[in-house]
Length: 222
Image 1 (cartoon, helix red, strand yellow):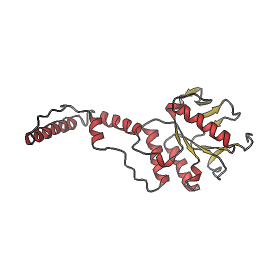
Image 2: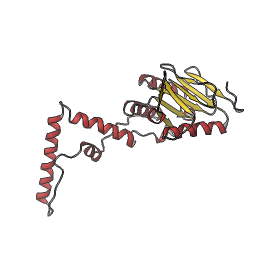
Image 3: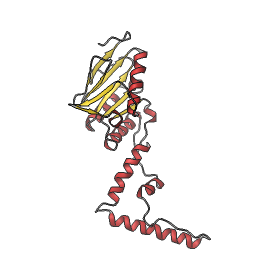
Image 4: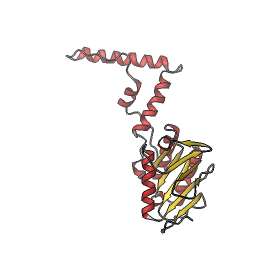
């Protein structure tokens, strides 16, 4: 997989099981490239091109940018929608269909019993949407991470498995994690078969685990 920009001479090349670290020391360029990549990940325009072999990939569909690691939550609406979709498919699949029908029947009986004991006449959908039921029960992925690194690992796993993201971009993650923790994130990305890009504004000593690209304070590529 490759990530290129029309104004940058070097192309970022992601090898299997090894991420990239892009150090941009110029604050002006750092802000510019992050803003463009973020805009493209939201469906806007910019100068980045993501490709896999000869195939150009849609950045909005394939790139996940984590600029605030504390805001990366497993109950993100996008993740929950995909999760509920998968669970609904399982609920109406061959193995679970009869149990799903039985559950809906039990729910209907429960509402009838409530109606009998209340002064109100009630009605309900005899076949309620399972996604609505999951939401009402607050079904979500368990967040068992004990620290920021583990929570990020779980988030990376979720967005790759449920949202099919191919490239995870971490912005200045070296400000929050130690060297060994970054190594664990690299392993998580490799295990989930997604590329990992660390965007940093200074060198932090991750080069032995990451392919390194540098734009210095003067805007020169190294």
